[in-house]
Image (cartoon, rainbow, N blue to C red; front, side):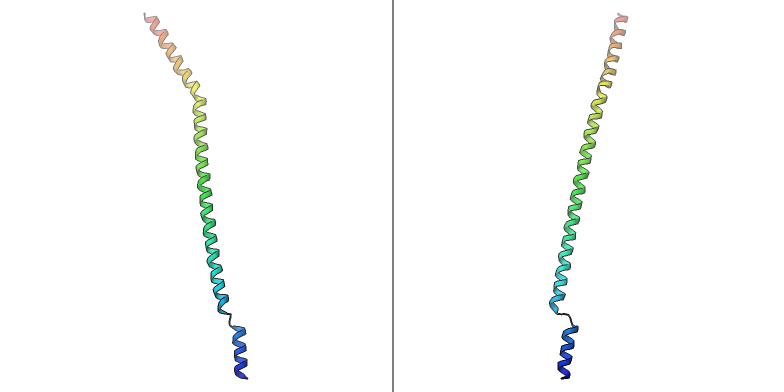
Length: 90
């Protein structure tokens, strides 16, 4: 009778070994999911950074094009001045 009571107590108190394995498998799966999430986050941030760099280059090109007529006008004014001076010297 004591053995039966002892066996019943051990069975109730001790967790089944399958439960420990299931927890371990679940923890491994959670770790894999966290690693995948981190990889996706890195990928998204890298793509965002690349997009920002492209946008910055586009804005720089637009700014260069916007200022180009001013620079061309300055060169043309300088050229006109040189032509005028050369005509005066002749």
